[in-house]
Image (cartoon, rainbow, N blue to C red; front, side, top):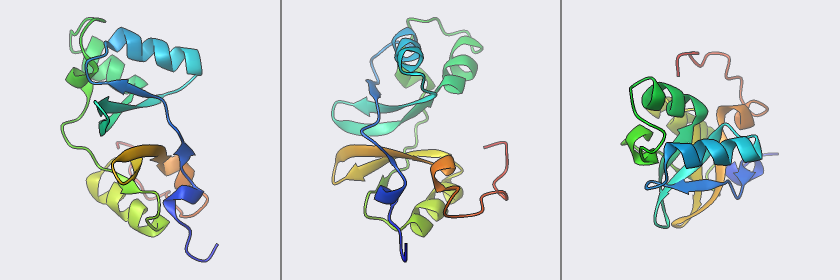
Length: 132
């Protein structure tokens, strides 16, 4: 691959939850599909991602109940990349924002999820701090 694009490495059609869904519903969706990350949407617009760690640390450990909304544990800042973006640009954007997972867009539509793990074959990410 001369100049690979995000589309070459992303996970296509990632499962999503709405910001109004409960932590319980997100956890159930993760368990049923054996996932650790879901895209979070507000209507059709991607507003971030939620991880199993977010559910535990930002949710349960912070005293939120299982019926709290996903919005309560989703970061206020969303970083996205385009499916035709070069992998190098996506890596740089993720690193600059200190995020490990980003929704991939085609226009305004979520078409994938890109993680640092996906990029492992393209870049040496050993220098990425483990605290991210």
